[in-house]
Image 1 (cartoon, rainbow, N blue to C red):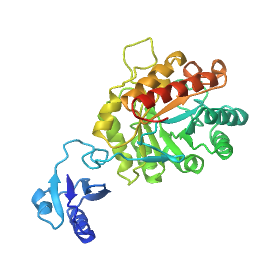
Image 2: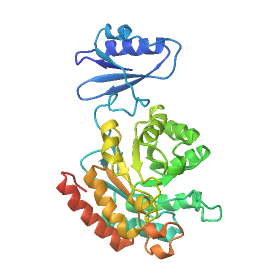
Image 3: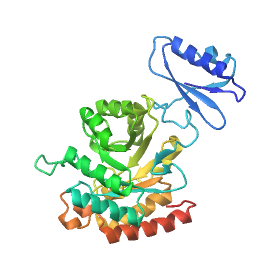
Amino acid sequence: MIVIMKLTATARDISNVIARVKMDGYEAHLSEGEAHTIIGLVGESPTPLREDHYSTMDGVDRVVRVSSPYKLASRNYHPNDTLVALNGSHAGSKQVLVIAGPCSVESREQTIEIAHAVKEAGATAMRGGAFKPRTSPYSFQGHGEKGLQWLAEAREQTGLPIVTEVMDPALVPMVCDYADVLQVGARNMQNFALLHAVGESQQTVLLKRGMANTMEDLLMSAEYILSHGNSRVMLCERGIRTFEKYTRNTFDVNAIPVLKARSHLPVIADPSHAVGYSEHVTAIALAAVAAGADGLIVEVHPCPAEAMSDGRQSLDYDGFRKMIDSVRLVAEAVGRTA
C-alpha cells in the first residue's frame, strides 16, 4: 500500500503518517517527487492494513493498494524516473551511457590500455571482471584483488568509473573499496544473501537479469536491494535462455519498454552476452537504444581471439568506435544523446 500526500501536506503531516506506519508494524519508505510525496508501506505485520486509518489523516490525498509484489521498484511508488549518477552523467536521463571493457582483466598493462581506448571512443565507464563465475571450474576465474587494483589504477589514469562483478557477500566490502558500481551477475540474480549485502553497502548496483528469469523475478531481486534504502540500482537485460542455437542467448528487447513502464529504475542493455557473436553486437545495441535503453554495457578487447574469456563476443577497438558512432545516430533519431 502507498499513501499519497497532498501538495499542501506539512512536514508534521508526513511525520505523523510515518509514525502510524511504524506503529502498525510496517516499514515506511519515503519518495519525494515533483508533484507528490509518497509513503510506501512494506514488510509484514500481524496488524492488518486499513485504508481508512490513513486516508482520514491530515495531509493525506489518497491511499492506493499496490497489487504487484514489488513495491519500491514500482512506478506506483515512485512515478518519476530514478537517475543514477555515473561519471558526471545520469542513467535514466536523455543520455545513453556506454560501459565498456574486457570480460576479464588479464594484466595491469592491458587493463590500463583498454581504459584509455574506450574512453577515447566515448565510453562513460569501464567494465572488467576481477572475479569471474564460469560454467567450468577449470576455466579462468579472474585475478581477484589484484585485478581490482588494476581497475582502480585505470580509473585513476582515465577518470572512468569502474563496474565490476561481486559474487560473494563476504567480498562486498573489498570490492566497494575499489569499484564504483557493483555488478550482480545473471547467475547470482537470486543470490538473496548477496542482494542484501549490496543493498546494505549503499553502493551503486548493476543488477543483471538471470538467463531463465522473468521480468518480475528481476524486479523482485531489485526490491531486495531497494529495501535497504539503496535507490542506486540499474537493471540489466542481457538475454535469456531459449531453444535457439544460433546465438548465445535471445535478447529480450520487449523487456526494455516493459521494465521502464513498470519500474522507475534505469535499464541497461548488454548486447555482448545477449547475442554472443561480435559481428551482431552493434545491431543488438542499436535495437536496445531504439527501444529506450538508458545505457549499454559492452565487452571490448584489443585482440578478442586471444581473450581469456568471452573473446567471441568482444569487439575490438575499431569495432567499438564504429558501434559508438552508430549508437549516436540512433540515439539522436529517438530524441536522445550518446
